[in-house]
Image (cartoon, rainbow, N blue to C red; front, side):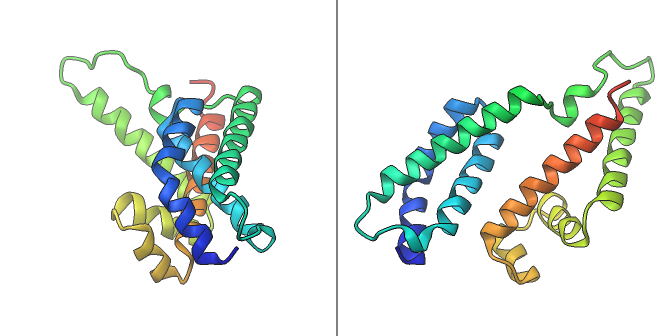
Length: 171
């Protein structure tokens, strides 16, 4: 199957595949990650996919399998989001505790980004999460494919989350 055909089939099915992945995983961010992983799996095998093959069925099966793999990984090493570890007690009289808590969280995440991510990962996180740039803009700026940017961002966020949780388990 050629590159354009695979891309157009997958993009045409994206909303339906995302709904399916969200239903399986229970989380829209995890569903987006699953779609990226599924597309990458299909992309690496695109030369072996026959043009007359039922690309829709193959895409659906691949997304389903990626979701099941994610559920299995999740059951072996459960993770929580950044905000799940925040103290949710009401702030003191002056309300400065909540702002201080957020500032400490932000500083901790910034240290992880600066110290543990590659320069390319740092640039992607900065451009997407801070500047709000599109995947296409980031890909163009970094001479990458938009799919590669999505995968790198997903992996960077996962690494940040894991490091944060590992360093803040005892709090």
